[in-house]
Amino acid sequence: MRDDSPIGLFTLHLALLSLVAVGGVNTIVPELHRQVVEVSGALTDQQFADLFAIAQAAPGPNVLFVTLIGWQLAGLTGALLATAALCVPTCTITYFVTRVWDRFRDAPWRIATQAGVVPVTIGFIAASAFLIARAADDNLVALAITAATAGIAYWSQINPLWALAAAAALGLAGFV
Amino acid sequence: MAESAVLDPVRQKVPRLSELFLGFLGISLSGFGGVLPWARRMLVERRRWLNEREFAEALALCQFLPGPNIVNMSIIVGSRFRGIPGALSAFAGLVGVPLVIMIACGALYARYGELEALRGALAGLAAGAAGLIVAMAAKMMAPLVREGQVPAILFALAAFAAVGVLRFPLYWVVLVLAPLSVAYCFWRPK
Image 1 (cartoon, rainbow over the protein chains, first blue to last red):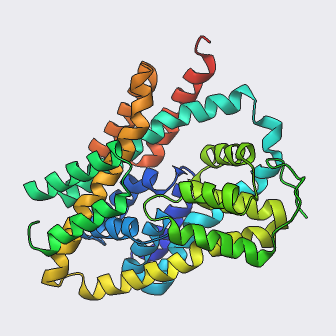
Image 2 (tube, rainbow over the protein chains, first blue to last red):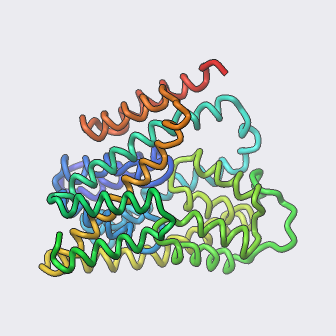
């Protein structure tokens, strides 16, 4: 793909990436970051963290983070292409596997595959957390907000949306 | 109609396409900060499309396959009741309205994202969102640590270091680490 078609290249990457996005879009955040911030420079680190935050705060599945990136890259076309690229391959797989799931649900290779993929997925999500935090936390107040939100989400039953609202309010008041 | 092997075909009432659409629309709009708990509430408790065991089965399949769990759930449930049209209805219900909201957010961000007042709010929000994903990683890691699964912890740390610190392309890391980790799980002493 040529440089004058970044959304085409991004769409292809996403379609491929979707196949390893076990658990959801958080698994592939490190690669999204590498593609659009580090390799192509289409977004700044800060824009990437902003869009991730908007996707977390807005209703709906957080897969729509890629919709926002697509929008930034190429407007409406980009948003729709990115969303389709992430959803169509995996939905097709799900549709077909659903019918044969019973046949291999208890197969040793199936169980080993799932058990083996989980730790790798966890590592990727931890990498996502690291990269997003590094992009978002350029001062001590931001770092404290990240730590507090993480603590609330980890230890309490409070809806994390309240923590996000509080974080945004602190920022609006000029503390961050 | 396609019968899904995952779900028990005996059901007193098959939801219409519009019900599948509205059901998943409801899930998507109430699911701030994590959609799955809402999905269980809607699918099992309110609409009774699945029983507890069926939901657990479907969730296991969602977690096994690539793609967001809730999106896979919409395909499983939709196709179970109404084949491909059902899958499309459920998917459209789940993603359609949030997609429009997200595009509106994207447009607003592109236009006003650099405004001084909004910058502050976004900076705070971004710091908070980072905290959520830190907690998510910690929650997933906790069982491995509690159970002392040292090899799994090492695979997780290797994946973290390779993509998070060394910034290797994710594909290559998957192709190297996943087969090793799966092979270990397959052949480890039971």
